[in-house]
Length: 386
Image (cartoon, rainbow, N blue to C red; front, side, top):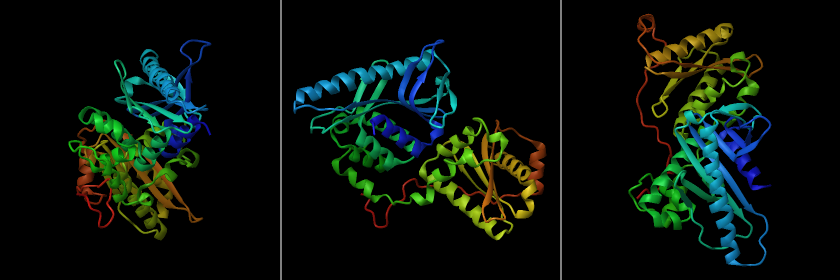
């Protein structure tokens, strides 16, 4: 498997095919085609652009040859290609590209607020020699230089795109505040320092131990099984085309603590529908993304009106919580033991609505909402955080 294939499969497994773009090409003029990047992850206002370099053969044991390969292929060529990517994005906006779901998507730099630049490289039989972790470009800023094994380790440790993005930003800050430590410490120690969550504390070799303190609770928050089959399972005509991306984006932007809240309420609705009893909707808000979620378990007698119920309750929850966007899910039991899950998104600027205000005052359909801290990384029992 080539390095491009490995990174592509990793990205689409963890970050969905809809938001993963591999071997990205586009046509700036009629009849011409150029490479935008070796890979791109694009989610709403966040993008990560990749260039990848692999040394297939290493003849002899010349350290000078190793340095020349890294200098020419990674430092010079790959970072120049990153700069070319940024130039293409700025000069040809939007650019139509094909994601790993074979959907043509208009990629617009105007929508991107955060863009990370990453070169992933692989050497056969790598030697224990110094490799810089950053390249500073006058025009592109910080470009991360990451060995393939470290990139896979970062993804498997952090797991969600919001945390990958935060970590790359964290590293860029550490490069300024702790340049020597950032360049010389192994990646596991830097990821452990990120888990520690204190930028003003000097990174240490034993920060790697922080990785072992995190409770492995993937089953409690992993929703890739729900999202990866979204388009294949939907029966809603409104979700065809690319409009359903708007729903997936809001869920994919959540960090694992928020995803625990999502999956907990998803499971509670399933359980309520199994016994086919009345149950009030469940809700939560991500203040970080500004999106609310409402989960509506319905008794089977309401199957035929479930869409109206979902749309109305989603609008009511959005208004009640003074939100600009809210995603609703409704659940109803099927005769064969499965469930029908419908989704909808309301996204408009909040404004006072006298009629909605009156309806909620007369008949309030929701549970009370309590503010609480959602911890992103639960610690193992007895873990020492000092």
